[in-house]
Length: 79
Image: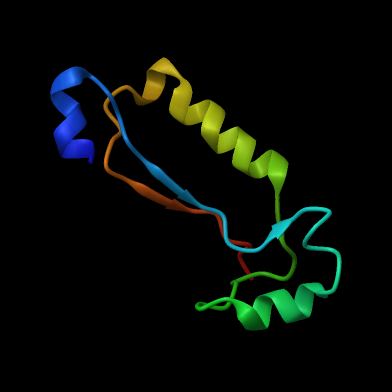
């Protein structure tokens, strides 16, 4: 998709936040259960917070990243 849209000056990136701390994620699952459900276990204890995702989105929307395209960003809690 990034290759197809590049001629139109459109960047395409993917954010993969993994287990995220949301009201829905707090119902029925503990942080430990979330970690066990992930395909690749997190590197750190805890869940990704929505503000961490928003921070990356803001960065990708900035002029500083006008040439960043076709990338996948994994937001994982490091251990």
